[in-house]
Amino acid sequence: QSVLTQPPSVSGAPGQRVTISCTGSSSNIGAGYDVHWYQQLPGTAPKLLIYGNSNRPSGVPDRFSGSKSGTSASLAITGLQAEDEADYYCQSYDSSLSGPWVFGGGTKLTVL
Amino acid sequence: EVQLVESGGGLVKPGGSLRLSCAASGFTFSSYSMNWVRQAPGKGLEWVSSISSSSSYIYYADSVKGRFTISRDNAKNSLYLQMNSLRAEDTAVYYCARVGSSSGYYGRYFDLWGRGTLVTVSS
Image (cartoon, rainbow over all chains, first blue to last red; front, side, top):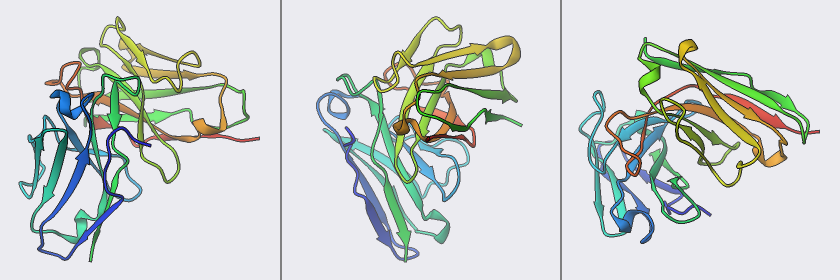
């Protein structure tokens, strides 16, 4: 059981907007710690997608955006494309025994 | 090219040992904290261990504490993970990951990943 909870799967048609949630608690997101997001394409290593809640590394399209509020964070993908089909993971710091750096369980995005 | 390349994975019996290596290139390795993150087959990501740029600060997940040892050799641009008393649940792809330069301790994120090396613990 992951400290950060993500939906196992989400789906959307090309061109649509999808969001992936990451729900934490008072020992991680709710305590104000930053949330980061990673994209893992099939058979490849994870890639940093969003850092510091809403910042995109160089080269990441602006179709990807992140936000945080309270004990949750969200990753939004607009203008969905076939190549966005991947697993997405959130990550943060946790001050409980689960930490210090924890990942969500991952969300499989399917482009219909 | 900026990259991380892991090696040393393989099949090992329960209770056995293995040493993973990660070769860094294309950046000033000695300036970055480094980590090991693993992913069991079909499962999510799990942070394993972290070492600061000068090896002054070392952290482990509870699941590996006392069994795994992280180290680095800045002269060789290399990161290591010595894994002892291996268990079936240690079976995973092990990734070497660099800490983002703008992240502090609490806001740590991983901005560069290797392709991983597979460790299989089975009799």
